[in-house]
Image (tube, rainbow, N blue to C red; front, side, top):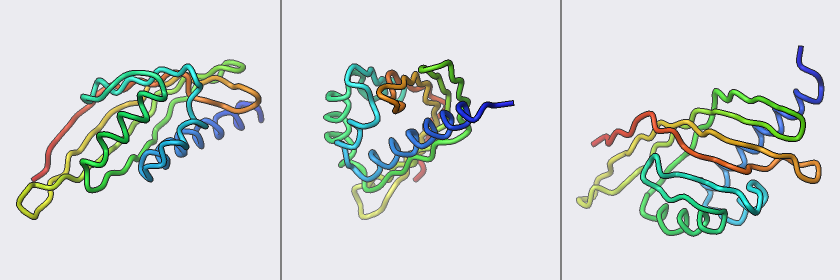
Length: 142
């Protein structure tokens, strides 16, 4: 049976996952400062993105995501393991991204991936210390 502390920890980590999706999907890059540790390493290379620290990640997202008309992150099926003040998680992400087809229409890039994360509790709050992607699929829908 899970202890109250582990239940709380898991819920806080799931909330952090949701806040990450909200920050990216709403293009509020500075909200990522409350999600990642200052020394975090984020690796989006499995789906063609950049890898680096939080500042480089914010710049990458700010530079690349305006090329898309819309996008959305749905994160779920999280398997979370808590060990004191550290935790790991593997969660699914479904990320459709809408592109212009250049002729007045739209195409949708469907991304399916897993986030593989390491978390740490700092000053009583969970933060992402490491995130990398494992690609499942990418499909362009006309």
